[in-house]
Length: 468
Ligand SMILES: NC(=O)c1ccc[n+]([C@@H]2O[C@H](COP(=O)([O-])OP(=O)(O)OC[C@H]3O[C@@H](n4cnc5c(N)ncnc54)[C@H](O)[C@@H]3O)[C@@H](O)[C@H]2O)c1
Image (cartoon, rainbow, N blue to C red; front, side):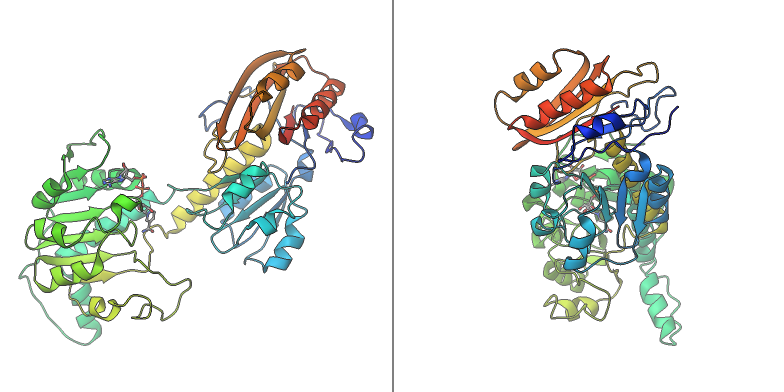
């Protein structure tokens, strides 16, 4: 296989660069000016053709905020030029750096506002190596054809394991015993300390975390019931109940794993505490708004709730330090004074394994997007993927056309592609932006350049990439 050469077109020199077009299967033609597989396979086909947009040494990647090693390795293995920084950057330095790069990887501290992204002339994709994407102006990025990926579920197992640990700690009052010992007090008691075997766990929200937890809890001898707005297949011998009230009336331990939505705000409040069995336990490692904390304080003071574990809060500090005080949440001191209450600083998903899994998931999504154009898992563009081109298709090319979602575009695009056989095509839209992918056969480098220029000249164009 010939080695790939840099065929990145420059706006001022599109004609001249035709001579650099390589027929290498790992080269491509890519829109310069924009701001800027198989459908669900994670293992590539044996005979998959490796598509890449440029000579690999020309893909510039900027990784900020100490992105995990596993993710860095995946990007480096692609031959991309990876610059790695341990911290985030002040806005002016970020703007300087982002001008040059095609890919940026961040975590939660780097703010990619419209002002910053406006300067990112070569950027095609953003990887958020974390769960949330609030730090990115997703709409603006989509309007510039910049895809954004994150990793919402890589830490599900970590959260589920934390909850298992907390169930045992609460049942045995381990937090209190440990605190007492730290203060020099020996307090050997068995009163109101329980095994978890045979107890009923009620899971509110049976998604990625809830389902993992269900399996773990059963393997420790618990009975599992769950409540979810969706009808879901129960794992093992778990049983779905029809109402939250039914769950609260039956469970010994109640654990919340729902998303933050208007419907889930305060979904465990005074009324729900009244519906619980006396002496039950509550765990919340979902979102801070799900549990009404003053109502929890009352329920624990009255003895209705025998113990609780909270990992999330309505207001959480932006950094580490002695910030968990009444200025942050007015009930802070009342909460901290309660017995058999485990308080953790939103660490449910904070493990080395989760960080590594996030690194792998996001870096893989980035390389799939850069190399194949697949937007599966993107948070701001429609999800579009085509099965991989194979090495038996050497003269085939993949057209990626990100465009404004306005009438008549497909007709014009298909007129442009019409001289070639379109082997497969897929298009989808999300709001004002649409994403089209088409694999065409029997194209030579000159034709690719013409196709590229024709697509770029359409008024609907946001970004064009041709991979081959
Ligand atoms: N503590 C942490 O560090 C940490 C880490 C990861 C995730 N989380 C949080 O955990 C929660 C669950 O995450 P997940 O990955 O399992 O989410 P998920 O989307 O996979 O599952 C959520 C489930 O809740 C259900 N649901 C939605 N609204 C509901 C309602 N009103 N009543 C009952 N069920 C409802 C959904 O149908 C879904 O099955 C999220 O809030 C997430 O932000 C916390």
